[in-house]
Image (cartoon, rainbow, N blue to C red; front, side, top):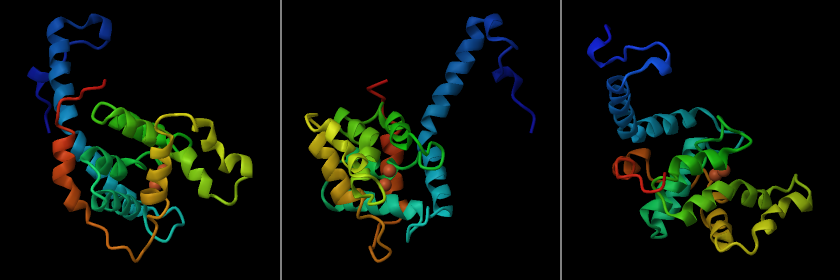
Length: 189
Ligand SMILES: [Fe+2]
Ligand SMILES: [Fe+2]
């Protein structure tokens, strides 16, 4: 397919770009941002290919987590965050919580962002292959105002969501919410 040259910059090095060039980039960036939900949905579908040796695949895990949040009456910030909390699993195995937190940060409240950022440390509490010290690494946050919220996220929604017998909502159930969520005005950039 031929590229629309009217909508392509004239420069080959950024330092040579004109104001008009950068307005073309800006327009393109805005379109890319509007497509964020679609890109995340594609990635969630990719997660179906990998089970990480659990009894259910990674997509089923996050659907289960988000379904539990939704059925507990949590608000959209929590439900969307539960659905996306592990999107970094295979791309950033050492920092997956931070990756999800940064995707969510412009659109969610500070508490949700903090919990998702740190949930990996809080999930370590359940891993009996770790030393006592590592399992209790969450204690470093004991005095943080969102500590209990992170404990609750892991206990009620995350650590228990590896159950093949749980009847989760399908991905389609969450798509309208995702599209609305990621096309709203980002408020924390
Ligand atoms: Fe996680
Ligand atoms: Fe998880």
